[in-house]
Amino acid sequence: MTWERMMVVTSRGEFEVFAKGNGEALCVTHIYSEFNQSGDYFAEAFTETNRVYLVNLREAGNSEKAQRPYELSMLESVFDLEAIRIALGVEQWGFAGHSTGGMLGVVYGIYFSAHLRYMVIAGAAAREYMTFSKDCIYNHEHPQFSRMQELIENLKSPEATERQKQQWKIERIKLSLADPNNYDIYFSSPITKKMSAIRMNFFNRELQLFDTTRKLQLITTPTLVMCGRHDVQCPLIYSQEMAELIPGAQLAIFENSNHYPFLEEKPRFHQVYKDYIDGLT
Image (cartoon, rainbow, N blue to C red):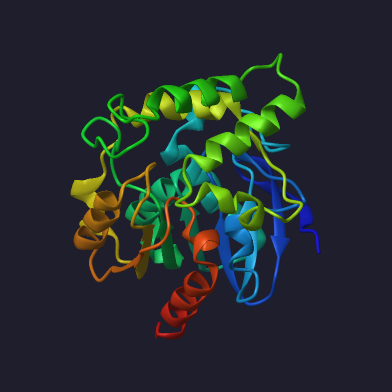
């Protein structure tokens, strides 16, 4: 079943949104991914329990373009999400974000907790995660650092063919799996998505000064933090930090996962999430 595509007209422009599932409204997005009707693996994890709204942010897919660079920032992106929520007529929704989507969720929670029913932050961080963690694949001392950087730059190349990009994307993902040999098992669905180079380039600059740790105490939204024990992108210590600093947050660690616990330990991921939302009052 493909996702339902809609163009949502808001006070801040028009945004491309894909919807699937039934139940309580849940927003899912990512800082620089470009989604389409094939959906997203992370978002798919919630469609059995929720009405999921998968959002293409500004400059992603067919969503509104940025007139000024600052409109690509995390804070502006949160303002856009709020405009989309209002335009959809949703009084309050949940938010689920993986990796940089989770970082955006932290900002969302700091400024708009009252409009969020709950948050799921998976494999993310509340601050810049590369400089001080040798376990991070984006740290220059990590053994796979150079290859990861090369793959990222390759994927941004306008001259590369789609076949080349697909091969590089697969290799990049394998670097973030506890067992790379299981790639074909985990990523067997016909889901395809692209990367917004302009959004990723802006994020890479914004990330250098990103640190919301002192404001995590302002989050009043019930928050579930999830992370793989062996996460090389946003190492576990950053999830532990968020769980300690966000009032009342719960932490779920997936012992046999790297950066993709929703695929690497899919049944447990679903159960942990279901138990969490069932326990909310």
